[in-house]
Image (cartoon, rainbow, N blue to C red; front, side, top):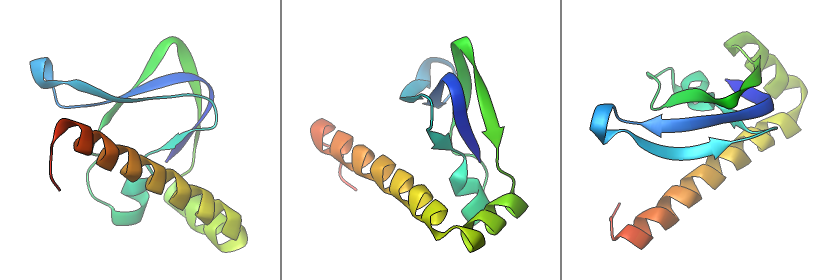
Length: 99
């Protein structure tokens, strides 16, 4: 998992002409948490913005430690995932996609 310390990153899915921007993330945003939770392959590609980005890596061991020692950290991760899911559902509603 990574936390954007400075700069911006772009999150995209697909490849070639099917590639589409999913989100732009700035300082304080996190990404990659799903891979820590379910150990499945990454579901998106993240690219540093034009000015670059500085990231903080949180590996699995540190993630487990932080969740155990700082319950507020776990809440922060869950809030980020819930916000992302809500945004996806709202976007699907606007385009007529059904879940």
